[in-house]
Length: 306
Image (tube, rainbow, N blue to C red; front, side, top):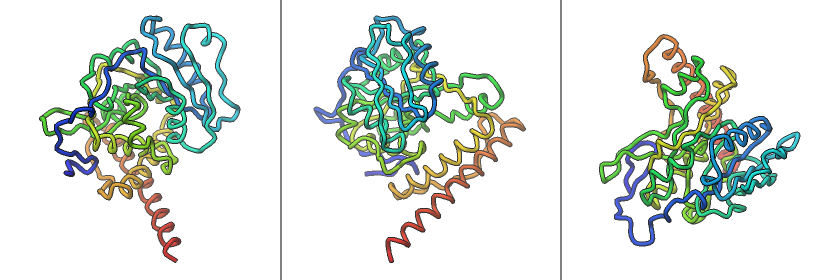
């Protein structure tokens, strides 16, 4: 096994018989959406889905997993009038990893499309994966900002919600991991590696860990034509919370994979004064989350050693 970057491991392999996925068809896709306290997001997602997807492109089902919302998530009558099964299930175990695992457990499709409740589907959400089908175990979809304000433009210019690229042994550009705001995973491979690590209880790092474990067993690929729109409507407070959470996730991944995930200063892809400032804040928030998680890990380790 070879460490290609500080994020991902690859094995030199020639994809033996039985190690490629089934062909992707829309009727074998189960969409799984974990949600906590975002009724509006679920409503908007389903409204937009039926605006952009005619019946001939319907997936097998949509599964909404309520993860301890208060008040509880509900499905609107208007969304149940279509010839598409929509399930609402409840997962009481904390964390998006547990919620997604529970969604897969209840899914009937051969493929699992993970979306988030703060995303909106586009017309190419499903067909983009069909176009990218090359026998991989999982596919990283494309995620763009819904809004056009300056902060959303920063997210887009930095490709915050696109997995970093690396080059595999065949010389192809492939994702180093997955971001489950928009990604498609072969259910058989997902179950084979044990699904998400439910010990990661935050929305940060659990999808990276899943992608790393999948990349050990098979191949990952990009599906740039599959587009979901992410609504970054939470402003600077959301920016702080998001990257502090990602920093915590980095430290958890570092602990699991024994690789260096320490945040580093960087220049933004598009070098404007505002983007340089945001890049500095991003680094500081990542570092703050990383340090906080590091302290917790060291404290837990010292407690166990007594």
